[in-house]
Amino acid sequence: MRSVHSQYKGGQKKFQSGTGHVNFKNLFECVPNQYLVLNKAFEIIAVSDAYLTANEGKREVILGQSIFNVLPGMSPAEAKNLRDSLERVLANKVPDVVAGAATLESSGPDPEEPRVNHLKYTHIPVFAADHSVQNIIQNIEDAAAPGELRAAQAGESELIKKLTARCIHLEAETIKARQETLATQQNLEAQKAELTKLYSNAKNNLLTSLQNEENLQKANNELAHSNFELEQFAYVASHDLQEPLRKVTNFTGLFVETYGSCVDELGVRYLGKVTDGVKRMTGLIDNLLLYSRIGRQNLNEEKESLNQVLGRAIGDQSDTIALTGAKVTVGALPEVCVPRAEIYQLFSNLISNAIKFRREGTPPEVEVRAIQNGQSDWEFVVRDNGIGIEEEYFDQLFIVFRRLNARASYPGTGIGLAICKKVVDRFGGKIWASSLPGSGTEFHFTLPSIFL
Image (cartoon, rainbow, N blue to C red; front, side, top):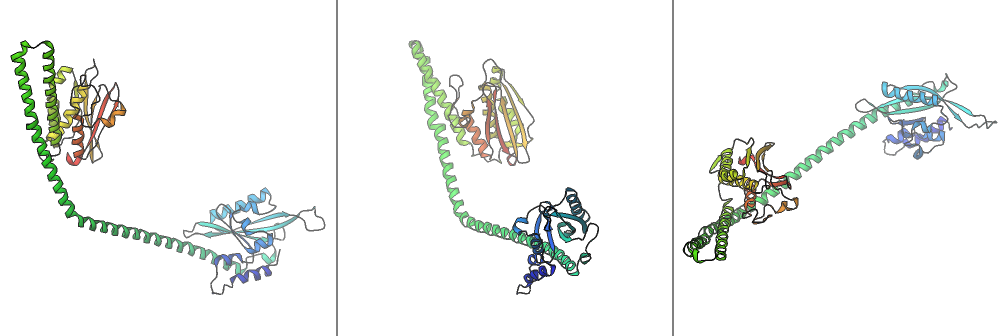
């Protein structure tokens, strides 16, 4: 090993920075004693030049290593004593000293005789800002023999004590300053993000306000045009289209009544098809007229209790219920008032479909219930035990005039579920189906509480 004096002179040069400031890392590395800095896992995170010189080691090799892998020739018992000393420092937060010995290769006349170097390990805690032990400084000194220490190294020199205390203080101050700097940086970043958001919102609001008047005028014009087209359609459907159909029906009836005895069986069948076609066309026009009127009603007018609206929708199908032996049960519903006409159409179509698409030989069972989803929406369910629907057809259920079954088996216009979807869309809700073929179908729809 080199002399302490030569180590000190070599380390002293590192303090000469030329700026009057001392670099903490250089300060530690040039301390003229064998020092190691350990983390709480007892891994080496810093090493003095004196230790590297005395043990002919390299800093890049030693850093990151466990102290127990670096110290040479240590027996298991001595390794345990060393670990116990380190653990006491962590637990008691005070320095601790332990004796040890390193078995080295002999440099004397007998190369086979090992050389034992007696050492003293001084462990000094380094505290964090919260006074917890963050690191441990290990000072390694030669000892004359087990149980006695060299007189020259009986105690720590005044310089080492002062440097150690200064190191501890500087590290605590550094940690505190780093934490304060980080907190300030985070606060500034948060303020910057908030200011950026406020600027963006203000800019968007300004652009929106500049376009509001033009957009409002355009929307009013489109709404007026749409209402005009709907009124025209309603007029044509209720008068220009239905009037000729009524005439065809009337004159067909008169023809059968007057000349029925002169017409053979095939002719009567043809006349029946004409009458059926007219009736179907009349129903189609009526449903189209109903579909076109959805959305024209003021949602705040003509309100009625939800239970009363549902009761009327069920009562209007009493003949069909009695004819099919259907059973309709209603669970607890919210005690609210709803727009009468549109909610009636919604429940009437769903219940009518639930009875219509029944399994042969099985009386229909229909259940209506409601579930509140939080404070915002009500979810309604109409369940049946009918024929069910294949999942591949779910996306076609709510298309106007889209039929999934033969008209001869299940009569209708194919517009009922489209009416349901248009009603639910107007309220800002959703409607969907779940089904198991052969076991029944559940139709779910949501209505926001603001409309109930």
